[in-house]
Picture (cartoon, rainbow, N blue to C red):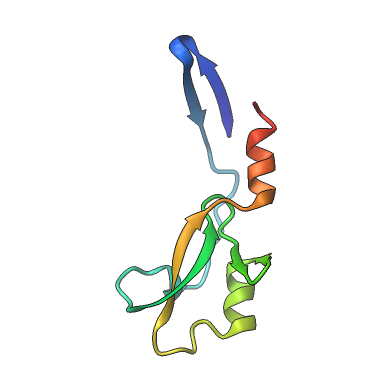
Length: 92
């Protein structure tokens, strides 16, 4: 991602994909499935989920905590993890 400050204090974000990877279907991020009222923070940049105090890869958290074995999938709320925040603010 390139972040550039242009005239009139406009910030331009330019992104391009480095690599496209095939992944298995993940029901937890599908909006058509019923969700619980329990919220799990998910990083909008890297897609890690915060479980208790640790940010974990989405598929690892699903397997470790059995998130998809429940009759209702957990709800996700979007935020940014500390690692991505540091990376983003290092450009400024």
